[in-house]
Length: 75
Image (cartoon, rainbow, N blue to C red; front, side):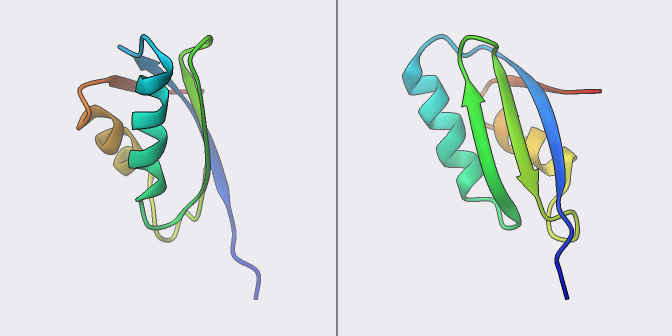
């Protein structure tokens, strides 16, 4: 049985350097259900793919905001 995947793009405010990007990527990598996460400093966005049965966009936003960045899902 194949797992379903969902994806989301989030705008992230407050990142100013490559260490910020690494900090966000490390926090996201610890989330159960996360498949991939790519954080881009130039666009100030994160692109994530995850298992919706194990993880929600809201939980991803919470993980980013726990690092004192502001995250907003994009449509």
